[in-house]
Image (cartoon, rainbow, N blue to C red; front, top):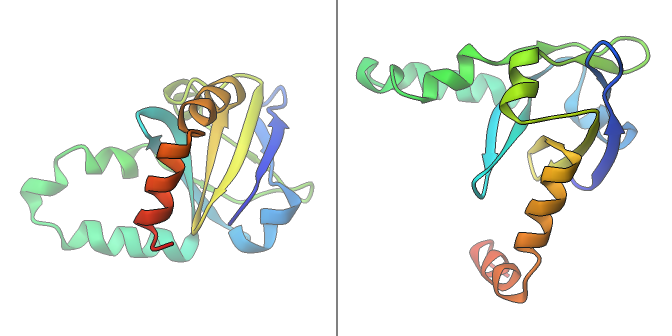
Length: 142
């Protein structure tokens, strides 16, 4: 998944799935807590990726399942967009990520993220430096 898509929450806390992400996300996907470079956001997983996360979680020893990792599952929402490609977000998820009416949906390789638009702008400005971009390119082998 790639790109960034400005959006707005409606009065019922529903968000439209960006047209360019619809096929990649599929009919069912999962939204849960996320964090990127110290900024809170929401992470969106396809059903297939969620299944892998679930299997990895279930393979952990019980002592590790009780840690913060379990919060990802406790606070997740399974989403099935309606015919207008809208899906709802829980109040807890919106509050966790500080999401107001204006939203930015961004692709992040195999996942997507949902950000409050102002918070995403701060994140982007902090990370759009030559040094950080170079370090990122080196980390992915470019």
